[in-house]
Length: 168
Image (cartoon, rainbow, N blue to C red):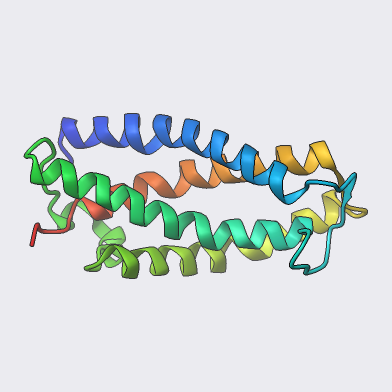
């Protein structure tokens, strides 16, 4: 059973704090990626400038992985200080298969599943909505909105699976 402390942690840290951090961080990343571009193409791979699609695919992989590493470390610290109880993996039901040992392994699993599930519809939506690419401002907005929405989706799940890990 998920305790009130665990639900509070997921709400305050897993959703609210993560949304603020993702907004600020991804605004900076989006501005940096699109620097000097008035128009960002829909398709293409470049070491210098992103395309809308390649940027989205990168977010689908890196955000769950980095989130898993940082959230797992924060939860481990709070559990070590006895501020957050360990969660019984059985409380997660089918999600318990993501409760593998090691934040890196969990992060890779979340990144792979997130990519497998969300990449096809995201590529299709991008192809339909951004047929001719995006303006600089639209790209930055898209980058931030995608990162915040994905963070809101995966961070609570990542946090709950991290709470199941025993302290070594």
